[in-house]
Image (cartoon, helix red, strand yellow):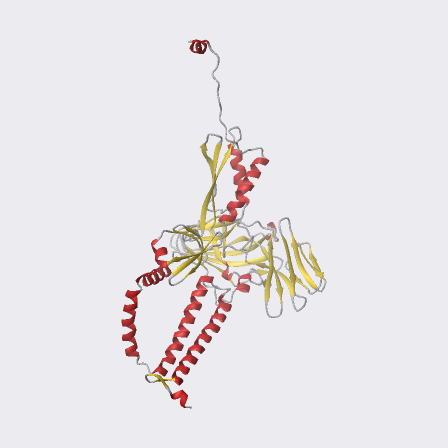
Length: 275
Length: 237
């Protein structure tokens, strides 16, 4: 078969190209199958983000191994390849500085790990859930379901607020009751409700106290700790329950009010009006 | 209390509050209480249903893998050991079981769940929290609400230590049962701030059967975790 021994460029023949393509193709196929089985086996036992990292690492390793095995068919001198690769790396590095900055930032983000996939975060002005941390960019799914891609350089230099970094977090309610209601009784009602809820943490204890004597009523403060994964559901659930429980006991949330006093009719006032 | 239900067939457990009924050609598992209705279609053949005690970290939903038991303070002399009897919250797991494998179908409990934080928000862990008295009188405890934990405390430090908390990891939490559920745990105290806890693969008393573990039902980790345990490094009191 003369066609196989036909030189395409330099000493590389059609057969060499076919060998390279076949070996690389097989390695891609093996990487794909391995990835599938790894996902299947690991999905129940480790975190999703860690699983993806392991799968990607193994797949890249397999493909690189395939390319490495198939390279001799190109009669490549690895010494030369390293020199060429190094020089090309410097040139490409200078030419694509921003790109390299993003890659570097991505690497540092992966090392520092200020957030993980699935965490609720605020990066600059963007709030949402971390969808993926890639080499060049980090993707966020906002709470409205919008996909946002942020370059890693921006992420690295921005202030990151991670709401899930700690296992527990605190939130608070300010509850206003009327001046003629029994504040101690209201506090007991709220404390009982908090005690009954499974995700209102036992320790640190929730604290409920009179925080302020406001314009319209007594302001009670309730400070509650909950698991970070559950705090939002607890927050949305408890406020309505507190309102209902207080109203059931005759304790009401006051409307804004102002006491207006009219001057009394006195002799002195009459004189002033007359003059 | 812990049952194995012949299946396929209809069944109604007033004690557990669930029933299995036939609906056309298939069967339906149904459990109702004040707040929830659990209804699941289950296979027609090749399975049985068993009710076993399970690791008490599943309700109302799994948010942690740690169980914390608070008990009245126990003063431990230097290099001494003591065995105390505690309770743990009992959760019933309903499993579909075939010859080779099993699948968790439902979990319920008569013990109100409560969660807590052991340690700090930055480095601590969320725990399923349970308060227990110290007692070895089984009759005084409602076996449908609580299981028994025999805890062997060993103070390996050279100082006096007061203990009133024990935190256990549920990755390895073998529970055994007969008419009640029981576990055996150990706690090695290294200092006033630090101790190692383990649940041991040992029956609470003779003749108990091992319960199906939920955690292993979900994982493929097959390594021996008995020795791993949990390092309590945020204090013991």
